[in-house]
Length: 198
Image (cartoon, rainbow, N blue to C red):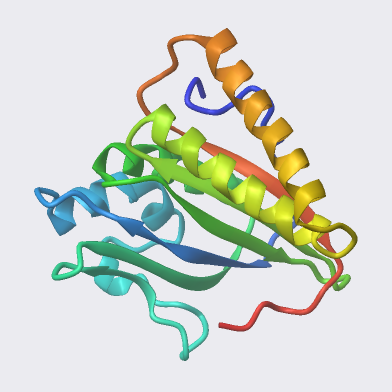
């Protein structure tokens, strides 16, 4: 688990038959083949008892599933399934292995829909290097802050807070020094909302 940030909180094991939706797009390096992607995603594919991306269909017919677009060099993920214990670990292992094959860092949204109506949403960051992941993490956080602060404050106040956040990121990077070459990180959130429609 050395590729996970120490601040990451891994969700507790869930009851069997929880619905989950995984959504995002990952840019893939030019030299990567589909079989290499399938190897990287083996933990996820094995968990749902399939062997190839061609079988990685979503439980909802209007969603494409997990598809590699060779022309665009994009791994497009819009997949829903029913999962039980250890799915989170299988997904994290797959995304960690996917990191070195990616062209740039990106965020993949993972949402669990609980029987009591709660949605548990996390953002998993996948990228070729820790630098790339940190850069996209910073961008996502700043976008979230701008959306939140924009409800109450004007541009000068928002810019002031964003400047402070950038200073915190810069300081953390300087204090941390060298970092692992690849990795993933999760941004957990819990909401009581409706299903996110695509």
